[in-house]
Image 1: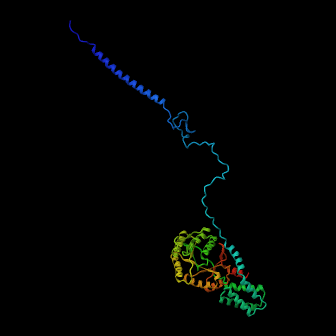
Image 2: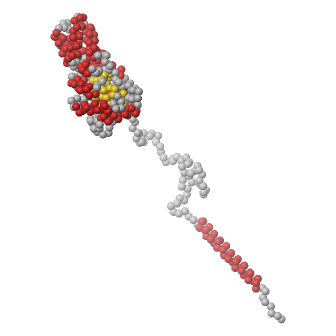
Length: 417
C-alpha cells in the first residue's frame, strides 16, 4: 500500500485563528463594560462637597434640575419681592437728608428814582432847614435895617455859600424888599426861594452820560480823595442804573486800598452786576480799568463804571497816575463822565480838592455825599460857581438807595421847608 499525507491540518489552523480573534473582542467588550460600570458607580455615589449649597440658593432658582435660565428669571430682570423683615417708617422726619446745594442769593430790586427823590427831599428838609428858617425869620422882621442884613449875610456865609454868591443874593433881596416893602412871610418866602433857585442854577445840564453808544458802552470814572465814599457811590450808582433797566459792568481800579475790590464786587452781586478786578494786590489801576472797558465792549453792556483809588490833591505823583488811568481807557473808548465825589461836610475845603482834580481829569459832574449830616447846603452853590460844573447826584444816608439825581428846585424847597 502506498503512503498518504494528512489533509485536515489546514482547516484546524483557520479555526484556531478565529478563536484568538474572538477572544480579543470579548476581552475588549468586557473591558469596556467594566469601565462603564465604574463610571456609573462614580456618578451615583457623587456627593455635594462641603461648603456648596445643598438646596436652592434663593427664590429665583429653577426647580427640578432644569439646566437653563429664562430671560425674566435672570438676576436683575425680575421684580424683587418685598422683604417682610424691612420696615419703612411712615414719618420720614427723622431720616437724615443729603445736604442741598447752596442757593444763589436773591437779587435785590433797587428803588425807582422817583421814589428816592421824594424820600430824600423829606430827609434833607429835616436835617438842613436851619438855613431857611434863619433867613425867613430875619426877612420877616418888622424892621429890616443894616444889622438885619449883616445877620443875613453872616448866616449865608456860615452855610458855605461862598463870598460872591452871598453878596449877590443879599443885594438881590435888598432890592426886592425895598421895592415891595412887604413883610408878609409868604411873600418873603417866595422872594427868597426865587433868588436861591437862581443861585443853584436849574439851567445847568445835570443829566448823566450813561447811554450806550452805537458800538461801545458809556464809560464813567469816579474820582475823589480818601474817605469820601467813592466805592460806595459807585455801588449805589450801579443800583440807580439797574433801576433804569441798564446793563452795567463795574471796574475795581482801586488797587491800593485793602478790600476795595471785594467791597465793590459785593455791591455788584446784590443787583446782578459783574465786576472786573485783579487778584494781585497793588496791581496797575490803569490795567484794571483797561480790562474792564474791554470786557464791557465784548459784553455789549450799556455802562462801565470805574472806581479809582483815593488821591490826595496835593500829591502830584498820585494825581498824574489818575490822568494815566483816563488816558489808557481812552485807547478803547471815550470817557463820557468823570464824577468827583465830595464830602459835603468838608465845606470850603472841598473846593480846593475840586479845583485840583478838575485840572487833571476834566470833571464833568459832582457827587455830594453826607448832605444830610452837618453839611450847610450852601456848598452846592459854591462848587458850581467855582468849577462851572453841576452837582449831578447827592447822597443822603447810608442806605443802598440813598443816592438820587440832584434837583435844584427840590433842593431849595427842602432848605426852606
